[in-house]
Amino acid sequence: MEKENAKKIVFSGIQPTGSFTLGNYIGAVRNWPLLQYEYNCIYSVVDQHALTVRQEPATLRKRTYEALAMILASGVDPEKSMVFVQSHNPVHSQLSWILACNTQFGELSRMTQFKDKSAKHPDNVNGGLFTYPILMAADILAYNAHGIPVGSDQKQHVELARNIAQRFNANYGETFVLPEPFIPAVGAKIMSLQEPTKKMSKSDENINSFILLSDDKDTIMRKFKRAVTDSDGVVKYDTENKPGVSNLMGIYKVFTGKSFEEIEKEFDGVGYGVLKEAVGTSVIEALAPVQSEYTRILSDRTYLDSVMKNGAEKAQRYSQRILDKVYRKVGFVQLKNK
Ligand code: TRP
Image (cartoon, rainbow, N blue to C red):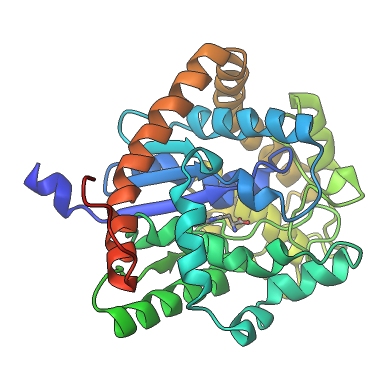
């Protein structure tokens, strides 16, 4: 128990906004079960974050179940880690208000994701889109999490959470642990198969540019066979001059554990067709067990509902203590018979 308490806390969230790509899997979810042994892990399906862009209610509901099934299919054990849906724990929005009052307009205006997203959806630059990093800070600080596994695009938000925590501690006394981003070294960024200088994204118009976790074997192989490479025919890791080939090599490395030198040797003098087929096969084999677990779990609503319920209770119990402390620190009157 002593030892358990000494373990650092890891928190990460995933938005239920669509089908998962190979990029989401390699960059995020795949690492989540691996962290369970070393840390106390908390994983959340952040449905409140998803509302910053317009969502069809039935679709949001469906995708929330899908995201949870994906977390569980990847190997996260809800007995070992805390797994829950963000809107099931009201502490996040409650803490978010306090943090908002300790965050500057200027800081939020500098967030690159806000600038990008407001340019992309000029018809819906809502308050939630602007204050989203505060809610994300609340997700993290409500559990005093230290390590935040995120893709490089979320690093700025974690740094903001750290700044807010630091400022709160300076104004009100030690309250929050200062969080740090963990950017997974391998496969932090999987690129588009069609335009390998761009990140792989499910919102890409060209469906051949991404692999979905729901793609079947033949689709995966076909997409890899069509992947854009270059014309010099040499399998060499060089992200600058050979982004397409390097991206394929990066994916192959994740699933085979081979180094880039070993991969270069393996495909020396054989042309890209052989490489593409080998990468396709490695992905098909690695995803097969996750895909079948996903299908099995997703069809078991009773199980998913019970995971949600238990997770919500654990999350609320844990974070309420931290919120109570924050409420005391800022000067809210405590109810006497609590
Ligand atoms: N903003 C993250 C994303 O879009 C998701 C997220 C929400 C998150 N809250 C979080 C990630 C807290 C890490 C920690 O990918």
